[in-house]
Amino acid sequence: MAGAITFTYGTTNKTNAKSAKSFRMAWTSDASGNVSGLPTRKINGKIRQLVTIPGAGGLAPTTLYDITLLDSDGRDVLAGVGANRSATLPEASAIIEQIVDDSALTLVVSAAGNAKQGTAVVYYD
Image (cartoon, rainbow, N blue to C red; front, top):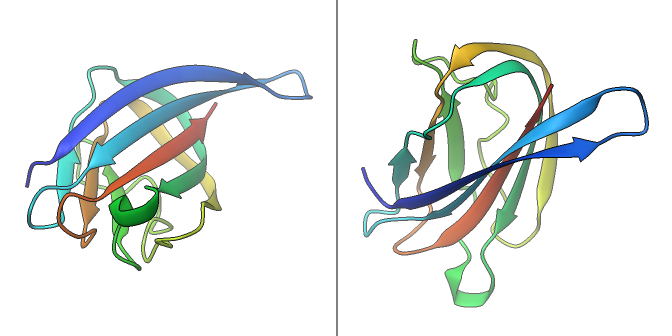
């Protein structure tokens, strides 16, 4: 598995006293419709939400593509909510307090189609 991924990090101010951190992964699948990659930064905190945004037009992934985010033990910290994502609409899914302890997380996208694109954003605190 290969493909290409660009990782970016940020902070979102919330209305309460806490700020959520974000971990954005813009990806392009390889010829087999898959992507995998390891970011340069480790994260520490509780995973709260996954947002997926399909590419536009002919770059949209195949419907019902899957995303997992694996910790160093191979556990999907998205708790399965990255399965069967929409190829046409952005989707947001809440994740119930998946704890990540100073881990570099490996993004794995599968069944997205040849040279398709999308973005996955993970919010954590």
